[in-house]
Image 1 (cartoon, rainbow, N blue to C red):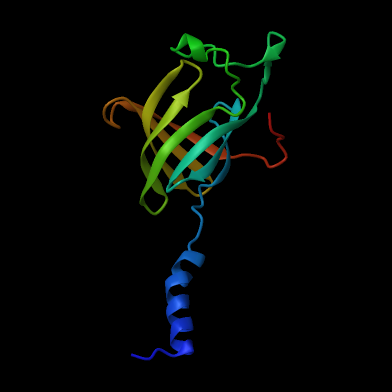
Image 2 (cartoon, rainbow, N blue to C red):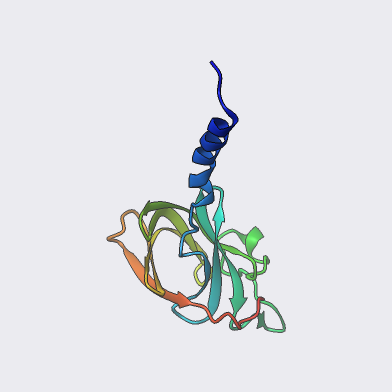
Length: 150
């Protein structure tokens, strides 16, 4: 069977085009927490979404960089909060909804299962134990791009 060069080009473009045209999820970027105390940057990690703390309202506490002092693992209590992974394993469920992820709260040192929904310029994160009904929702807003990193 003889295949023309044009046929190979068309076939190659048909295979590559969907990948090239794939859009990044609109949830990517920096988000200011509901408390206004931190900014988390959401980014792709493999085929899921993750997030790390990139700005703190109080990066220095007691004369030293803020650390994860309330972590239940004593060995982790001296790790800096800046750059700490706060979200992970979020997979797309449907347009503007991600689930099966987790969120870490440095305020109490606990990790919760979580879902997130993008609603315009608001990101609704629901952390829970067991089932989503037994949880709490926070609403995050897009962070001011002028905020510098930690």
